[in-house]
Length: 426
Ligand code: NIG
Ligand code: FE
Image (spheres, rainbow, N blue to C red):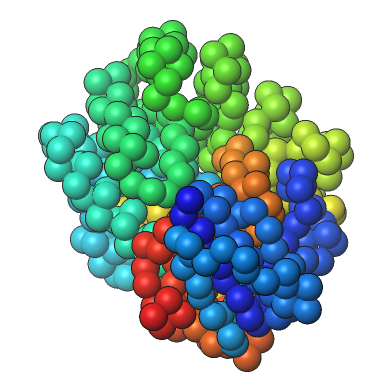
């Protein structure tokens, strides 16, 4: 039996008791920790933990890897419940256009944006897409990400959307991190359907969703509800078809415009509402009025705001209204060419004014819940996967987001096995 014992951790962070599904409002700042802690993992799962003062000792040393984590924090690995990590090519030419003053919408209107990515992805074979995405995900794992959601949405034809999801499925089988997948065919209207919006939404609802559900290619459905993309009514059709096939919604709403997408997502029992850069009082009130265990989880993407120079989501107002705020990267070639959740942690504190403990809860427990993985990931809890980050020695937990842009990670462990080995393991 393979076992891993971590001793003398400066603190074990996020030691939620068994059964916590998500944390909301004021609870987010009460991140549970055990100072001077030990943790035992067996066969890839956390089996026991506690303070060193109650360490029972080791009777059997066979097949045991021992880590002395003196001075270091041990955290649950980051979870990233919103990415578009399968794509064919970066779009740094648009980045330069943005520096010169063009907006995201102006670039899209000139043939850039999502349609630009779609044309390139359609032309690329599965093998090349897989190799590229695998390299990106390996980089993200080294930065502490242990579970990720991956969306389609750069195919925009039946064949290419299926191709993207098949690539994601292969990634899931070939990498140690956990992968959840989302059908985002309603990402942009493809040129072939320019004069037939209804026909494209019917293709999604009547052909793609049933086939994706039948082949087990996706766990969720998504739609980009925005001016020039999809209307609230079109998103609702996607959510309805998803629900009929057992695929809950995780939707792009309120990135540039408040259209009523949040209220529609609530009506359809969506798991998460993502972006939320533009929120009016009615949007906040609609979320606050939901029963706590049914509210779609507000998922904020501060590195997208940073990169596009658009407003930051109102994290404080969401937390003050008792909501379970989630953070994610939104890694994609157009609005967020970074999958680094350590940067998201700093941006959440600096720009969203989240407390370090709130931001850590949002990137672990709540991020796991926002892709239905709260039983498996997101906290240091017996029974969950032993997927962890061991930091360099740090003076305090707040130091991690404070010293932004610094690599604080020494070792990353997924399912009890090191995938990045630092000094703690030597
Ligand atoms: O989440 N907003 C829509 N989709 C992506 C961006 C996609 C792109 O520009 O390629 C996002 O920001
Ligand atoms: Fe996105």
